[in-house]
Length: 442
Image (cartoon, rainbow, N blue to C red; front, side, top):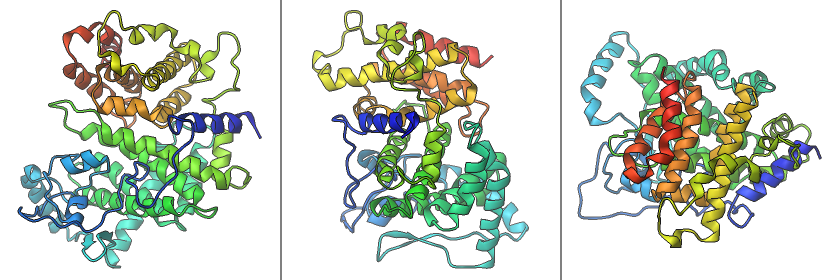
């Protein structure tokens, strides 16, 4: 087994859960790995049903508060929140765009919820659906695939633009996720293209639904596709950060849970592909450069992301004598989670200082929510100030890659949002991330 494979297996076992063993995927559990939940019919009386609520609330026939991009119910259950149509506040724009679309004779593809199974049903086969999907696949192969392969200098073009599309022809979840990310990319390039906006929301819903089924039925035949689908979902999670409202800051729970869930998928899939030389995922792991051997050379601790020396320059984020917070929060699991976050963020800072290539820095940042202990994510979602400050340091590093369409201004927005959520006593430890985004904005 290569060094990269050994380190990957060790890292997965370390970060999958707080006790070192990743939880098993269960068909009856809500899972962030897919962003969906195993919903049943749960009829509630005494309210007027929403006609414009999210897909999950409508499928469960419960009242949706229609908060975008994450309604209260989906936030509470920590699942993906998908709307079939844009919110009512954007209705005038939608009607105008619809008139433009109708003038050129372009019908829409309708996705409906099957009320008997509470599942999102595929649209019927039609000429327009075939043309739409061909258009999306063409856009993915010529533009989107290339745009998301930039963080992968070795296998990138082959994996994202060649191997993945071929594999998608055999696996629906992967195919739907390709259509979704291509439609999202197209909607960013053409803001008035409401067909693309509807398509990405609908295909994402289908992708998450099918992906969840695949994850609960992992095998040697679908393990590679499941891992690649999770990777595309992580790209979507980053892209969605740019559009979430930050008037009153709330932690990016959907982003964190969707991206961290990929670890569960990789951990389960590794049982099937870990010794398969023909596996795409195995070849990808062998080419990963964010991990070095388990022991780092002198002055190169950053090559091992969680090395204890990486966080020395950020040790002030762990000091309790300067900034008081409840002592009960400092149980061993919490302290270990904070230390892991500081070590990892420190490793990225040191890698930048050492001149590591930009695509490798980006890869480190992409897998941070995947590898960080789940306890740290829970602390962020609980709005613990110290966890938010550490998250601000992470997003300050993400801001370096604002030129990528699926990252954009997300880093700066999150840092500014976190600043508004903290009391004045935390201002000192926020100086570094604020200075970084200020420099990046020039």
